[in-house]
Every structure is written in C-alpha cells, then in structure tokens.
Picture 1: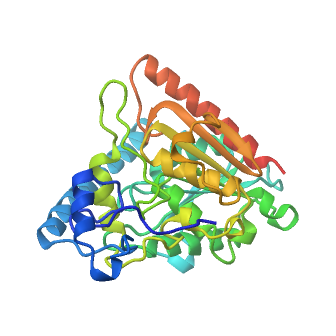
Picture 2: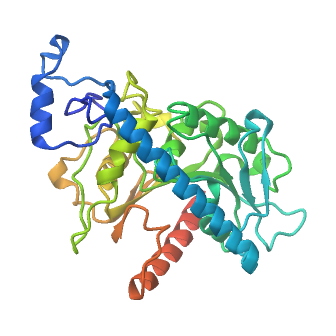
Length: 378
C-alpha cells in the first residue's frame, strides 16, 4: 500500500530513532550520506550509536525501569492493604509457550457459567521498555465489567535486553495461545473473527498492528484498536512535536529517541512492516476493521492518521496540508479515526486535577463505550 518506504531524512549516529530531527541536523546528515545514497535517498536502516551515547541511554533507561517498577509495586501494595480490588484481574495465567511471562485475565463480574463473551486482547505501552500488563488494569476491568468482554492483557519481554522483533513474537505466541485457550468463556467456533478484538496503547498499539499481520492471528482477529500508536520508524511520516497551548512540551520529545534506540537494533530495516506498520504493502496485510485513536497534542497523531488514510483510501496519501479536511473523526470502509481533542500522549493513564480530571473521565467513558460498540459490530 505504501508507495515508498524511504525515510525523508537520514538516521544519524546521535539520533538513533527515526524521529523528526532539527533542520540543521538533517542538512549535516544529508551531506554525510555514503556514496551509494548520492541519489538523495536516506538509508532505511538504523546506524550505530556512539559508545558514550549508548552508556547515557542505558543509564537513563534502567533508572526509569527501577522507578516504574517501584511505583507499580507500591500501587499493588496499597490496593491490597486498602482492599481496593475493583480493578484487579480475575486471575493471572502463564502459557507454556512463554512460561516466564504472566498475563492478566479479566472475566466480567456478571458472568454466568455456560455463557460466552467477545474477546479483547490488549497489549500495554511503555515505549517497548517500561511497564507491565497491570498498568492497564483500570481499562481492562472497565471493558470486562461495563461492556461484557473477556479481556486478556498480554505480557512481553522488554528492551533493551529484548529488542525488536522479540516483543512482537512474544505477543504473537501468547495471542495464539489465548485463541486456543479452552478455559476462556469465549465462543470462537461459532462467532469466528468478529468476536476477537486486538488492541494496545502507544507501543502496545504498534505491537497490536504488528501481531495482527502474522499467520494464525490475522485470519482470526476481526478488528484492531490502536490507541495513540507509533506506526513509523522510518521518519518519512513523522509530524511536528506538539506542545500544549499552555506551553508544555510534547511528552515524547525527550523520551522518544531513547525508547527507539532501545527497541531497534543497529542495522535493522526501519521499513519492516512489523516495526513500522505504516509500511504494510496491501490492505489485506491487516484485518479489515481498525479503529485508530490519536491525541491532539501528540506528535504520533500525524503518522497514525496518515496510516488510517492510506488504509481507508487504498494507498492514496492525502497531502500533508490537507490532513484536517476529514475532521477529527471519520470512518470509511472499516477504518475509523478519532482525534481526542485537548489531550496529550498517555492521557488515558495520567490523572489530571479538578475540572480537567472530570473532562478526562468523561472522555474515557466515551472511549470505552465507543470501542465496545464498534468492536461488536458485525
């Protein structure tokens, strides 16, 4: 579907990410292109990163890992002590194919023995580096109790210890195991793909779009819901960073290059559709129904909407200055797009204060409802 997978700017040593770079850096890198790229094309692979940069990135990454791990453990401890178990999973399960990874399963509290439910398989975010399935408990429990899904939150090994494509294949193997799990009250035999939705937040949205391309999954998944996903590591479709009206920087401006370096091995083809799903060559490479959700003040919003338009319009890329023509929400031939106004990357997981939190909660409820209704459509 994509007419070109060549990035618009070279990926340099100090910017090992595919993220949009300052104009001066781009000009310097274009002047330094190797001889076999004198036609003006930039390389589609990630180059090596200087040793000192690697050490600096590793220090920051493992510091963040430690902080996030302590935060999640404290959160679980507080929930146990205060008996606030309203968002906890029904049980956890390890599948033999990836026995080191624990997955969280949510059964609706209203479930009656002998009945079945649609299946929602979710993949958590965290830049391929951070977090764990419990990070999405609030969403997964709401989708189970309020909207009647069996929700399985799958786990995967994290970068940089386990870089691409390890997380993709972890999620794929566990997804196949879930689809074969006879203990789940899901009637896949009679309802087929229409009863299975695959989704994820941020990096999890990327992984959902990757996993859905693979054999044994693509033909069994009816729809995908990527929420503010990263879909392009080539740099070709990156939009500008988007500060909020009150001057706050785009959350990914600082962390994006760090996460990308950790996830993408040197020499990796950045146009591999399992890494950059926007590079899929045909509409048939993915399930036919996809509900993309973007955040207004998130630079990933631009690339995700371009991917949605490419899928919806058969590979025809709308000019960048026309990106707003369809409005903040549209749907065509199974592809649905929504821009959530006034929010930043990660808005679903980060509480606000006062009136802003009331608005956030209202938007969350609307998102839950619309994902549920859209996923259940035949």
